[in-house]
Amino acid sequence: MFHSEDDPAQMAKVVFVTDDVAAAETALAELGEDFAVVGGTIPLAFAASGEVAPRGVHKGAAIGAILERLDIDPADAIGVGDNWNDAEMFEVCGTAIAMGNAVEGVKALADQVTTSIDDGIWNAFERNRLI
Image 1 (cartoon, rainbow, N blue to C red):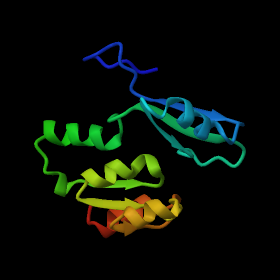
Image 2 (cartoon, one colour):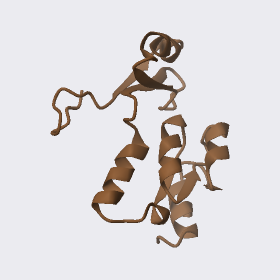
Image 3 (cartoon, helix red, strand yellow):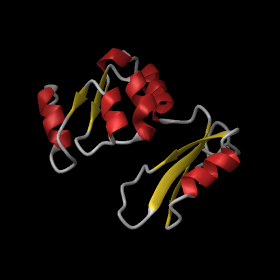
């Protein structure tokens, strides 16, 4: 468990991997009123995975805070992701790029779709003139 320096009692996020394929649904049913639950965040053929975090704790909030601290316009930020835990990040970044292996709904949220994980980051960076 991660403890924030600003509030040591606040949990940031729990990531789980289990052989229980219904784990995310169970966590959502039991914790959904107080926490955000996202299933399937780690692609594993042999297990189920997901994340549990207090509402408002997500990649988008973290990136937004970093951009503000560095005085960078969010329109100039590029976010690359492949699953539902990247949705809020896509909302913050001026350019949202889904990996080729991303789930279809996440691809629909993106401004661009790159190739799969083997060379997707490279291709996305090249396309956007970062390298």
